Image 1 (cartoon, one colour):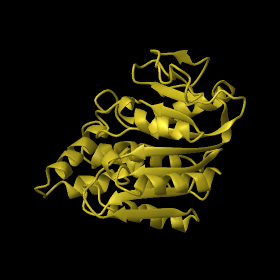
Image 2 (cartoon, helix red, strand yellow):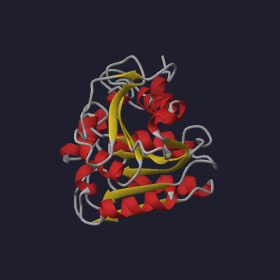
Image 3 (cartoon, one colour):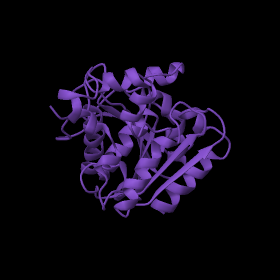
Image 4 (spheres, helix red, strand yellow):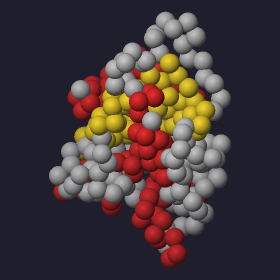
Length: 279
């Protein structure tokens, strides 16, 4: 069943992020569904002003990772004046695709429904994902024909095409590419992209769902990482045909996901892109 963002948000474990109030920030952990991983940390400035939103989605091969690894980045965006939602989601070891996209959509719906609680401007937010989280973020961006209020999607080393990752990992000595191939199979429920599983693999392909009202995207890759820039080329082509702007950017090296984000100049450029789309 799809996670539903209904009723009041359910408090999760308390997160103490600014105990002395130095930054003027408030935070709490909220459950947006019944599963233990359907939770998000929310950081906001309780000054009576509504603020643009940033939704962060962690990576981890779809099968691991936790929002805790995004805490520092969450704080950075909160300090910049955004209301920030740092998401957990059901892992592929717990539920097959599209559960991960469903969870991200449910978290966004919960945030919109209770926007006044967190001073969120529901007409002005972005989704930022890292690696497997970049795949989820981009899939949110191409779900349906646009989402009200979504002004942009950013992917750091995003797996735009699990099919491409599956093929790239077939005959290679690169252990990361081989692991990504296996991770994509696990995400699809344990089966290869043929026969009865063809539909779920098609659902996982971000570029195949491009629509004219989708949000613009920024994707960033290292030139020699195991999720190469070619992953974003089809997305740029397909969204471009629909009239949606996609900016693809690559930097030298092999840095992946959070390591790529910490490469000098990358975080600053991502922040500039977000600012230009949120104001």
